Image (cartoon, rainbow, N blue to C red; front, top):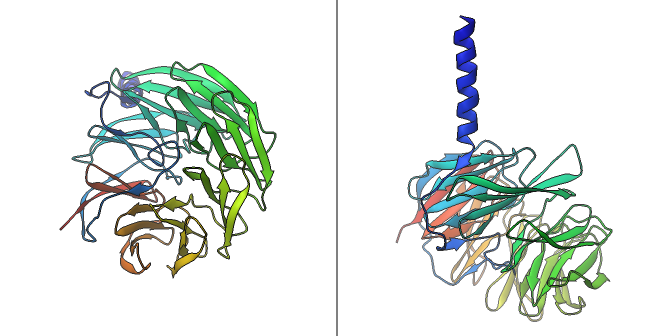
Length: 378
Protein backbone atom coordinates (compact mmCIF):
# COMPACT_ATOMS: atom_id res chain seq x y z
CA UNK A 1 0.00 0.00 0.00
CA UNK A 2 2.87 2.39 0.95
CA UNK A 3 4.61 1.57 -2.32
CA UNK A 4 1.43 2.42 -4.25
CA UNK A 5 1.06 5.79 -2.47
CA UNK A 6 4.73 6.57 -3.16
CA UNK A 7 4.23 5.74 -6.84
CA UNK A 8 1.20 8.06 -7.04
CA UNK A 9 3.10 10.93 -5.39
CA UNK A 10 6.07 10.41 -7.71
CA UNK A 11 3.78 10.38 -10.74
CA UNK A 12 2.17 13.63 -9.63
CA UNK A 13 5.56 15.27 -9.16
CA UNK A 14 6.75 14.13 -12.57
CA UNK A 15 3.54 15.24 -14.30
CA UNK A 16 3.70 18.60 -12.53
CA UNK A 17 7.24 19.20 -13.75
CA UNK A 18 6.40 18.04 -17.27
CA UNK A 19 3.48 20.48 -17.39
CA UNK A 20 5.84 23.46 -16.86
CA UNK A 21 7.03 23.61 -20.45
CA UNK A 22 6.23 25.35 -23.74
CA UNK A 23 7.59 23.57 -26.79
CA UNK A 24 6.19 24.80 -30.11
CA UNK A 25 6.87 23.86 -33.70
CA UNK A 26 7.37 27.38 -35.08
CA UNK A 27 9.79 29.28 -37.28
CA UNK A 28 12.60 31.31 -35.69
CA UNK A 29 11.29 34.53 -37.23
CA UNK A 30 7.57 34.93 -37.79
CA UNK A 31 4.64 37.31 -37.38
CA UNK A 32 4.05 38.43 -33.82
CA UNK A 33 2.44 40.89 -31.41
CA UNK A 34 5.56 41.09 -29.31
CA UNK A 35 4.93 43.42 -26.34
CA UNK A 36 2.37 45.46 -24.42
CA UNK A 37 1.17 48.25 -26.70
CA UNK A 38 2.51 46.52 -29.85
CA UNK A 39 5.74 48.54 -30.00
CA UNK A 40 8.17 50.46 -27.79
CA UNK A 41 6.17 53.71 -27.97
CA UNK A 42 2.96 51.90 -26.83
CA UNK A 43 0.62 52.26 -29.78
CA UNK A 44 -2.91 50.94 -29.16
CA UNK A 45 -4.27 52.03 -32.55
CA UNK A 46 -5.20 49.55 -35.27
CA UNK A 47 -6.02 51.28 -38.59
CA UNK A 48 -8.91 49.01 -39.62
CA UNK A 49 -12.68 49.19 -39.34
CA UNK A 50 -14.32 46.42 -37.34
CA UNK A 51 -17.82 45.03 -36.94
CA UNK A 52 -19.80 45.67 -33.77
CA UNK A 53 -21.11 42.09 -33.90
CA UNK A 54 -18.99 39.59 -32.00
CA UNK A 55 -19.16 35.81 -31.75
CA UNK A 56 -17.33 33.92 -29.00
CA UNK A 57 -14.83 31.53 -30.60
CA UNK A 58 -13.40 30.06 -27.41
CA UNK A 59 -12.92 30.63 -23.70
CA UNK A 60 -10.06 29.37 -21.57
CA UNK A 61 -9.19 29.56 -17.88
CA UNK A 62 -5.77 29.99 -16.31
CA UNK A 63 -4.59 29.45 -12.75
CA UNK A 64 -4.39 32.99 -11.37
CA UNK A 65 -5.82 36.45 -11.87
CA UNK A 66 -4.75 38.95 -14.51
CA UNK A 67 -3.02 42.27 -13.88
CA UNK A 68 -3.66 45.12 -16.35
CA UNK A 69 -1.47 43.56 -19.03
CA UNK A 70 -2.34 42.09 -22.44
CA UNK A 71 -1.77 39.02 -24.54
CA UNK A 72 1.20 38.73 -26.85
CA UNK A 73 1.26 36.41 -29.85
CA UNK A 74 3.59 34.49 -32.16
CA UNK A 75 2.38 32.72 -35.30
CA UNK A 76 -0.79 30.90 -34.21
CA UNK A 77 -0.07 30.99 -30.49
CA UNK A 78 -1.10 33.44 -27.76
CA UNK A 79 0.81 34.09 -24.52
CA UNK A 80 -0.57 35.55 -21.28
CA UNK A 81 0.78 36.04 -17.76
CA UNK A 82 -0.92 35.72 -14.37
CA UNK A 83 -0.32 36.68 -10.76
CA UNK A 84 0.37 33.10 -9.64
CA UNK A 85 3.73 33.11 -11.43
CA UNK A 86 2.61 31.44 -14.64
CA UNK A 87 2.92 32.20 -18.34
CA UNK A 88 0.39 30.32 -20.47
CA UNK A 89 0.47 29.61 -24.18
CA UNK A 90 -2.76 28.89 -26.09
CA UNK A 91 -3.47 27.64 -29.57
CA UNK A 92 -5.24 30.63 -31.12
CA UNK A 93 -7.42 28.42 -33.28
CA UNK A 94 -8.82 26.18 -30.55
CA UNK A 95 -8.10 27.82 -27.20
CA UNK A 96 -6.36 24.67 -26.00
CA UNK A 97 -3.35 25.07 -23.72
CA UNK A 98 -0.20 24.57 -25.81
CA UNK A 99 2.06 24.84 -22.77
CA UNK A 100 2.71 26.78 -19.59
CA UNK A 101 5.60 27.92 -17.44
CA UNK A 102 5.55 28.08 -13.64
CA UNK A 103 7.90 30.35 -11.73
CA UNK A 104 8.07 31.49 -8.13
CA UNK A 105 6.65 34.97 -7.58
CA UNK A 106 4.01 36.83 -9.57
CA UNK A 107 4.20 37.81 -13.24
CA UNK A 108 2.76 41.33 -13.38
CA UNK A 109 4.09 42.21 -16.84
CA UNK A 110 3.12 41.16 -20.34
CA UNK A 111 5.47 38.48 -21.77
CA UNK A 112 7.79 39.88 -24.46
CA UNK A 113 8.44 37.86 -27.62
CA UNK A 114 11.75 37.92 -29.50
CA UNK A 115 11.73 35.45 -32.40
CA UNK A 116 11.36 32.08 -30.65
CA UNK A 117 12.09 33.38 -27.13
CA UNK A 118 9.60 34.58 -24.51
CA UNK A 119 10.98 36.97 -21.88
CA UNK A 120 9.07 37.61 -18.66
CA UNK A 121 9.67 38.90 -15.14
CA UNK A 122 8.57 37.21 -11.92
CA UNK A 123 8.47 39.52 -8.89
CA UNK A 124 8.92 38.04 -5.40
CA UNK A 125 6.53 39.28 -2.73
CA UNK A 126 8.69 38.32 0.25
CA UNK A 127 11.88 40.04 -0.89
CA UNK A 128 12.91 42.98 -3.04
CA UNK A 129 13.95 40.95 -6.10
CA UNK A 130 12.65 39.70 -9.43
CA UNK A 131 13.75 37.02 -11.87
CA UNK A 132 14.12 38.05 -15.50
CA UNK A 133 13.51 34.82 -17.44
CA UNK A 134 14.43 33.98 -21.04
CA UNK A 135 12.70 30.87 -22.36
CA UNK A 136 13.20 29.27 -25.80
CA UNK A 137 9.76 27.92 -26.71
CA UNK A 138 11.06 26.22 -29.86
CA UNK A 139 13.34 23.99 -27.79
CA UNK A 140 11.29 23.95 -24.59
CA UNK A 141 14.26 25.21 -22.60
CA UNK A 142 14.90 27.92 -19.98
CA UNK A 143 17.94 29.84 -21.23
CA UNK A 144 18.53 32.31 -18.38
CA UNK A 145 16.93 33.45 -15.13
CA UNK A 146 18.66 36.64 -14.01
CA UNK A 147 18.06 37.91 -10.48
CA UNK A 148 17.21 41.63 -10.51
CA UNK A 149 17.34 43.87 -7.45
CA UNK A 150 13.83 45.34 -7.16
CA UNK A 151 10.33 44.15 -8.02
CA UNK A 152 9.38 44.43 -11.72
CA UNK A 153 5.71 45.46 -11.70
CA UNK A 154 5.47 47.57 -14.86
CA UNK A 155 5.61 46.75 -18.55
CA UNK A 156 8.81 45.72 -20.36
CA UNK A 157 10.05 47.46 -23.52
CA UNK A 158 11.64 45.38 -26.27
CA UNK A 159 14.21 47.05 -28.56
CA UNK A 160 16.56 45.75 -31.25
CA UNK A 161 19.33 45.53 -28.64
CA UNK A 162 17.41 43.94 -25.78
CA UNK A 163 14.79 44.69 -23.13
CA UNK A 164 14.31 47.73 -20.87
CA UNK A 165 12.34 47.81 -17.63
CA UNK A 166 12.04 49.68 -14.35
CA UNK A 167 11.58 48.41 -10.81
CA UNK A 168 9.31 49.53 -8.00
CA UNK A 169 12.26 51.12 -6.18
CA UNK A 170 13.14 53.26 -9.19
CA UNK A 171 15.96 51.39 -10.88
CA UNK A 172 16.00 51.18 -14.68
CA UNK A 173 17.86 48.41 -16.51
CA UNK A 174 18.68 47.39 -20.06
CA UNK A 175 19.55 43.75 -20.75
CA UNK A 176 20.54 42.20 -24.07
CA UNK A 177 19.03 39.03 -25.51
CA UNK A 178 21.89 36.96 -24.05
CA UNK A 179 20.84 37.92 -20.54
CA UNK A 180 23.71 40.38 -19.98
CA UNK A 181 23.20 43.77 -18.32
CA UNK A 182 24.05 46.64 -20.69
CA UNK A 183 23.42 49.41 -18.15
CA UNK A 184 21.51 50.33 -15.01
CA UNK A 185 20.38 53.65 -13.59
CA UNK A 186 18.94 54.43 -10.14
CA UNK A 187 16.34 57.24 -10.14
CA UNK A 188 16.17 57.04 -6.32
CA UNK A 189 12.37 57.23 -6.34
CA UNK A 190 9.36 54.89 -6.15
CA UNK A 191 7.98 53.99 -9.57
CA UNK A 192 4.65 52.39 -10.59
CA UNK A 193 4.46 53.91 -14.09
CA UNK A 194 5.17 51.77 -17.17
CA UNK A 195 7.80 53.27 -19.50
CA UNK A 196 7.61 54.00 -23.21
CA UNK A 197 10.46 54.72 -25.63
CA UNK A 198 10.82 57.21 -28.48
CA UNK A 199 13.80 58.91 -30.15
CA UNK A 200 16.16 57.02 -27.82
CA UNK A 201 14.50 58.47 -24.69
CA UNK A 202 12.78 56.24 -22.11
CA UNK A 203 9.99 58.13 -20.34
CA UNK A 204 7.91 57.32 -17.25
CA UNK A 205 6.51 59.01 -14.14
CA UNK A 206 7.19 58.35 -10.49
CA UNK A 207 5.32 58.43 -7.18
CA UNK A 208 6.68 61.93 -6.49
CA UNK A 209 4.88 63.41 -9.51
CA UNK A 210 8.05 63.68 -11.59
CA UNK A 211 8.56 62.80 -15.24
CA UNK A 212 11.87 61.06 -15.90
CA UNK A 213 13.68 60.75 -19.25
CA UNK A 214 16.65 58.39 -19.69
CA UNK A 215 18.86 57.88 -22.75
CA UNK A 216 18.20 54.33 -23.95
CA UNK A 217 21.63 53.91 -25.53
CA UNK A 218 23.81 55.25 -22.71
CA UNK A 219 21.62 54.84 -19.64
CA UNK A 220 22.14 58.39 -18.39
CA UNK A 221 19.54 60.86 -17.11
CA UNK A 222 18.16 63.28 -19.73
CA UNK A 223 15.71 65.09 -17.43
CA UNK A 224 13.69 64.81 -14.23
CA UNK A 225 10.81 67.30 -14.15
CA UNK A 226 8.36 67.86 -11.30
CA UNK A 227 4.91 67.94 -12.95
CA UNK A 228 2.26 67.43 -10.28
CA UNK A 229 0.74 64.55 -8.33
CA UNK A 230 2.00 60.91 -8.44
CA UNK A 231 1.93 58.97 -11.71
CA UNK A 232 0.59 55.42 -11.51
CA UNK A 233 -0.40 55.14 -15.17
CA UNK A 234 2.07 54.41 -17.95
CA UNK A 235 3.26 56.62 -20.78
CA UNK A 236 2.63 56.50 -24.51
CA UNK A 237 4.59 58.37 -27.18
CA UNK A 238 3.53 59.84 -30.52
CA UNK A 239 6.35 61.57 -32.42
CA UNK A 240 7.91 64.09 -30.03
CA UNK A 241 4.97 64.08 -27.60
CA UNK A 242 4.49 61.99 -24.46
CA UNK A 243 1.01 61.42 -23.03
CA UNK A 244 0.46 60.39 -19.40
CA UNK A 245 -2.21 60.73 -16.71
CA UNK A 246 -1.73 61.28 -12.99
CA UNK A 247 -3.33 60.60 -9.62
CA UNK A 248 -4.95 64.04 -9.56
CA UNK A 249 -6.92 63.34 -12.76
CA UNK A 250 -4.83 65.40 -15.16
CA UNK A 251 -3.83 64.12 -18.59
CA UNK A 252 -0.60 65.70 -19.82
CA UNK A 253 1.02 66.20 -23.21
CA UNK A 254 4.78 66.59 -22.68
CA UNK A 255 7.72 67.41 -24.92
CA UNK A 256 9.66 64.16 -25.31
CA UNK A 257 13.02 65.92 -25.65
CA UNK A 258 12.71 68.20 -22.61
CA UNK A 259 9.93 66.76 -20.43
CA UNK A 260 8.17 70.16 -20.40
CA UNK A 261 4.36 70.39 -20.40
CA UNK A 262 2.73 71.27 -23.74
CA UNK A 263 -0.81 71.16 -22.39
CA UNK A 264 -2.83 69.52 -19.65
CA UNK A 265 -6.50 68.70 -19.15
CA UNK A 266 -8.31 68.06 -15.88
CA UNK A 267 -10.53 64.97 -16.22
CA UNK A 268 -11.70 65.37 -12.63
CA UNK A 269 -10.73 61.92 -11.39
CA UNK A 270 -7.73 59.64 -10.85
CA UNK A 271 -6.08 58.21 -14.00
CA UNK A 272 -4.31 54.82 -14.03
CA UNK A 273 -4.94 53.97 -17.70
CA UNK A 274 -2.19 54.30 -20.30
CA UNK A 275 -3.61 56.81 -22.83
CA UNK A 276 -4.28 55.71 -26.42
CA UNK A 277 -4.42 57.74 -29.63
CA UNK A 278 -5.19 57.64 -33.33
CA UNK A 279 -4.09 60.04 -36.06
CA UNK A 280 -5.85 63.08 -34.61
CA UNK A 281 -7.20 62.37 -31.12
CA UNK A 282 -6.18 61.14 -27.68
CA UNK A 283 -8.36 58.82 -25.59
CA UNK A 284 -8.13 58.40 -21.84
CA UNK A 285 -10.39 57.07 -19.09
CA UNK A 286 -10.47 57.63 -15.33
CA UNK A 287 -11.63 55.78 -12.23
CA UNK A 288 -14.93 57.68 -12.28
CA UNK A 289 -15.79 55.67 -15.38
CA UNK A 290 -15.51 58.54 -17.87
CA UNK A 291 -13.84 58.12 -21.26
CA UNK A 292 -12.63 61.31 -22.89
CA UNK A 293 -11.56 62.16 -26.43
CA UNK A 294 -9.20 65.14 -26.75
CA UNK A 295 -7.47 66.76 -29.70
CA UNK A 296 -3.85 65.60 -29.60
CA UNK A 297 -2.36 68.93 -30.53
CA UNK A 298 -4.28 71.23 -28.19
CA UNK A 299 -5.98 69.13 -25.51
CA UNK A 300 -9.39 70.49 -26.54
CA UNK A 301 -12.28 68.20 -25.55
CA UNK A 302 -14.07 66.40 -28.38
CA UNK A 303 -16.47 64.39 -26.23
CA UNK A 304 -16.84 62.70 -22.84
CA UNK A 305 -18.79 59.51 -22.15
CA UNK A 306 -19.87 58.26 -18.73
CA UNK A 307 -19.83 54.46 -18.67
CA UNK A 308 -20.96 54.13 -15.05
CA UNK A 309 -18.04 51.82 -14.34
CA UNK A 310 -14.32 52.02 -13.53
CA UNK A 311 -11.75 52.48 -16.29
CA UNK A 312 -8.12 51.54 -15.76
CA UNK A 313 -7.13 49.18 -18.61
CA UNK A 314 -6.08 50.77 -21.90
CA UNK A 315 -8.62 50.50 -24.74
CA UNK A 316 -7.98 49.36 -28.30
CA UNK A 317 -8.64 52.09 -30.88
CA UNK A 318 -9.76 51.19 -34.42
CA UNK A 319 -10.93 53.38 -37.30
CA UNK A 320 -14.56 53.27 -36.21
CA UNK A 321 -14.82 51.61 -32.78
CA UNK A 322 -13.08 51.79 -29.41
CA UNK A 323 -12.95 48.49 -27.49
CA UNK A 324 -12.99 49.57 -23.85
CA UNK A 325 -12.51 47.25 -20.83
CA UNK A 326 -14.51 48.17 -17.73
CA UNK A 327 -13.78 46.95 -14.18
CA UNK A 328 -17.56 46.86 -13.73
CA UNK A 329 -17.61 43.34 -15.26
CA UNK A 330 -17.98 44.36 -18.90
CA UNK A 331 -16.41 45.78 -22.01
CA UNK A 332 -17.88 48.43 -24.30
CA UNK A 333 -17.84 49.10 -28.03
CA UNK A 334 -17.79 52.88 -28.42
CA UNK A 335 -18.12 55.07 -31.51
CA UNK A 336 -14.80 56.84 -32.14
CA UNK A 337 -16.44 59.95 -33.59
CA UNK A 338 -19.01 60.82 -30.91
CA UNK A 339 -18.38 58.57 -27.89
CA UNK A 340 -21.73 56.79 -28.14
CA UNK A 341 -21.79 53.38 -26.46
CA UNK A 342 -22.79 51.07 -29.30
CA UNK A 343 -22.84 47.86 -27.32
CA UNK A 344 -21.90 46.52 -23.89
CA UNK A 345 -20.92 42.90 -23.30
CA UNK A 346 -21.32 41.76 -19.70
CA UNK A 347 -18.78 39.39 -18.17
CA UNK A 348 -18.61 37.19 -15.08
CA UNK A 349 -15.70 39.16 -13.63
CA UNK A 350 -13.79 42.44 -13.78
CA UNK A 351 -12.37 43.20 -17.20
CA UNK A 352 -8.58 43.41 -16.80
CA UNK A 353 -6.62 42.99 -20.03
CA UNK A 354 -6.01 45.65 -22.64
CA UNK A 355 -7.83 44.26 -25.73
CA UNK A 356 -5.74 43.00 -28.64
CA UNK A 357 -6.79 42.11 -32.19
CA UNK A 358 -4.40 39.60 -33.74
CA UNK A 359 -5.09 37.55 -36.87
CA UNK A 360 -8.73 38.79 -36.89
CA UNK A 361 -9.49 37.63 -33.35
CA UNK A 362 -10.27 39.95 -30.43
CA UNK A 363 -8.76 38.90 -27.09
CA UNK A 364 -10.51 39.94 -23.86
CA UNK A 365 -9.55 38.85 -20.33
CA UNK A 366 -11.35 39.09 -17.00
CA UNK A 367 -11.30 37.76 -13.42
CA UNK A 368 -10.57 35.11 -12.42
CA UNK A 369 -8.13 34.27 -15.17
CA UNK A 370 -10.65 33.89 -18.01
CA UNK A 371 -9.36 34.58 -21.51
CA UNK A 372 -11.80 34.90 -24.41
CA UNK A 373 -11.27 35.05 -28.18
CA UNK A 374 -14.03 36.66 -30.26
CA UNK A 375 -14.63 36.57 -33.99
CA UNK A 376 -16.10 39.55 -35.86
CA UNK A 377 -19.39 38.86 -37.62
CA UNK A 378 -20.18 41.03 -40.66
